[in-house]
Length: 196
Image (tube, rainbow, N blue to C red; front, side):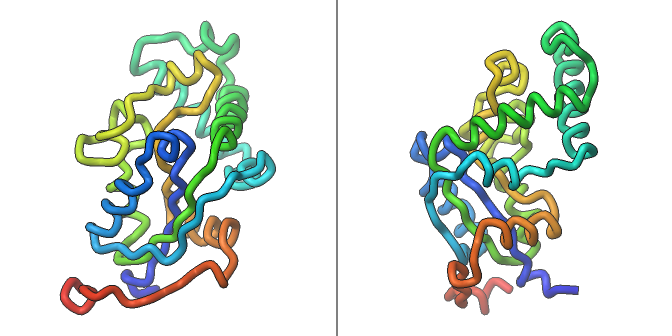
């Protein structure tokens, strides 16, 4: 097993986070947590890059549809009335398409974060994907007010500021996908000997 302090994860600051001037706030929260940024770049993604970033696996797309259906059910709204159909895979395809459009609507900031259980730590800092469920004190809880139903009605992705890898395996894939080895710069932070 990898030493926990060697774990790496990926963050993408989404177009709403960039346009709202939250880059510095996000970087600050990560660094104050004792995590280390070892790669950082602003860039304009292509539709092809974002299409390849998000899984094309039918199970993943169906899960996206299932999450959408659950969100509608939680708020007492009939998903079929909104979409015109009830099939999780078809709903997931719609949501995935809107997500791709949203993620290419402006520049992103991509980062690799390294540190003890960085995948879990960064997801905790980011907060729940659904802004209404994100705890205060998290990036999404403090700065995002968007809603999946509002986003779907406007045929767009949820403006939830940040993407963070869900698992170490996903992080490994995203690191290879978004970064070349020469873009990654490891170093020792001054407080590493004190903190861990």
